[in-house]
Each structure stands twice: as C-alpha cells, then as structure tokens.
Length: 437
Image 1 (cartoon, helix red, strand yellow):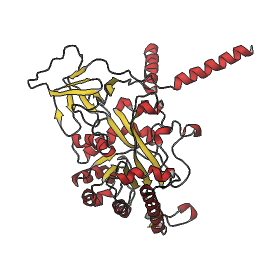
Image 2 (tube, rainbow, N blue to C red):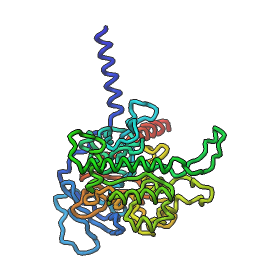
Image 3 (cartoon, rainbow, N blue to C red):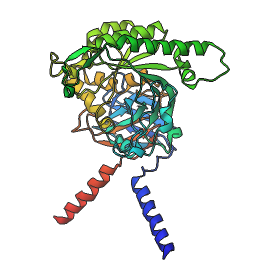
Image 4 (cartoon, helix red, strand yellow):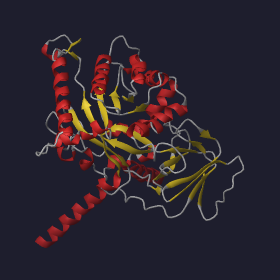
C-alpha cells in the first residue's frame, strides 16, 4: 500500500511538471526555406512589397524583390507561399525581466534582485529560466529576443541578451554580460501623503551626497582595473568592461536634471557606450543626447503623464520627439506587470505611429534600433543577407493587435512553436462550446 502511494505521488508530481513545462525547443534547420510573395519589412526603414526571402543553416541567404528579374532557383527548398502576408524581423524587448520571475506571489519563483546597494557582479543570465511559461506567451506576438536585466540597488547588476526558444540559459544566450545597470539618484522626491507631508515634488536634499557616493565607487573600480591587486574584488572586476569599452552603461533616470547629470558623469568617467533607460523627460533635451551620442530605451508608451502640466498624450509623443532629434531610441516595458506586458511591445510601437512616427520608424524602435543599442545588430534586428534568420510571418500589420496573427516564426532558422497555455485553453473551450451547439 505504501509503495502504491509513493508511485501515485511520483505520477502526480510528473503530471504537474509536464503541465508547467515549456514545449520542446525547435530542432536546427536542415533544409533551405523560401518565403515567397510577402511584404517584407526589413527593419531599417525599407519595405519590399513582393519579396523572396531565402534562409538556410539559420542564416538569411537572399532578400529579393520578386517583381524584378532574379537569377535564383527555389527547387529543393521548402516554400512558404506568403502572398498577402507580412514578414518582419523578430521583435526585441529591451530592459526586460522575462525569465527572472514566474509567479509574483510565489517567492521561490522570484529571482529579480539581490540584497545590497552595489551589485555589478550579479549576472542575470545565471538566474534566467528558459522554460518560463510567461516567455512562451511572447512568441505569438513576434517577440523573439530580449535583454534580461536584474533590478534593485544603486548598481543592479549585469544584463545579457537571449532568444526565446531554448532548453536552458546557456542555449538561450546570444550575448552574455552586455552591460552594467545603475539607478541614478532622484534629484526630486514626493512627500509621503500618508504621513501628512506635502505630496508635491521637492528637491532631494541627499542628492549631491548620493551622486558623490556613486562617483567614488566608480573611481575605486577604475583604480582597481588599472592596478595589479593580489586580492580579487568581484564587484570591481565586473565593472572592468565599462572602462575598456566592452560593456554598455545603462542608467535608469527620468528627470531632465538627472539625465543631464548622469550623462555628464558617464562622460567624465570616459565611457563611450551610454544608454538612458526610462527617460521620461528626455524629450526636452534631445539635442543634448544626440550631441553626446547617448541612446535611449524609452519607458513604456502606455503610461499616464507624471506631472500636472504635461499633456494627456505626453508619453505617446516622446518617441517622435527623440527620433526627430536624431537620438537612437528603442522601447522598453518595465513597470507594473512588466513581464506580462512585454508581449504588448509591438502595440506600444504601434501607438507611436498614431502620434507622429511612420510605421517603419516605429518598427525600428523594436528591431534595428534595439539591436544596435544592445550590440547585436551584426546578426539580429533586420532582414539582411548574412544575418540570423530570426523572423516571423504575420497575416497583417504586426503593430496592430487586430491583425497581428502569426502563422510562422523562426529563431536562427528554427521553426518554433507558437502554442502557449492560452492557445491550449482556447482550443479546449472552443471545442467544448462547439460540441454544446
């Protein structure tokens, strides 16, 4: 009897494991594939209305205009007839936390941050859960790549970039330890209304002190990188890439003064790769950012204005302001329920079209621009010969939630599954109601 109970327990645990596991990652591409007749959105602003895209061994071999004479034969290939459909590069989530938390209310599934103030040596990639069911729900909207970023503290840690169809973090990683992330001190703060304080904005009296502490820490790390210390300091060691130019510095800051101070700080340290994350008031200083070659990961488009004198559509217009100023801009999705909301990335980009950008400019925010900022544009972000065949085919406009219906998606040429827990439930209950009819 005890033996039967043990067997039952094992079977129950196995069923639970299977129900929560992601689908098996797609196998490597073994045969060339040609997508014929689709409108190809290259990701760099170019559009080919009637295209032929050929890829093999995970790389794009040809991107052609089918309306022009081409010396190419499609024999011995798998051909996808995509007439009337659209093909896009895989979308990229910047400054994301997908794979670090599965269920917010379950502490054991939360590996978002570490204790302490200065944690540059914390590597988010180690905690990345490639089998997250939240991750698989990104793929049906064309979100195929993302940056995994730790949170918490003044220096939050080191990020990496992954693709969303893998067995484990080693298989998922396409660029490890790409940059260090810091939270810049707030130059202003709001009073705590629940303690009877004025809820309005007021200067942070500790701002100068906090900036000095951060500057001192960076100066110590720079001295360590130049020295020959016999005693290892892992946090300082992790920051070496900032000083030799191999890592990007990502600075989370929203207010105009903070952005200006942060850029001047980074320049004084000699950093060449600087990205402002959030950048709520960056629209006021676009020329300053352009002159200093600073890129921006712009906060979630679908947010309310923070200040009383800002227009209701202030956040919708920010991307247009920065693009017009010549700033390299991508979109990020941090904030409330950010892992779930990451699947809405293409629709955030679509909103910027309604507020001034062209569709191809908006597309660049989540393809080419994101790839450039993350340093992966040599292989991802556009549909160009020699780059990774990470792309998808949609029935309609991928920036429109009504028509973005994917029929195929590929990561490095692998034909990945578009099934999710949600699609399984839809099929189950749609069949139930059909039977009842």
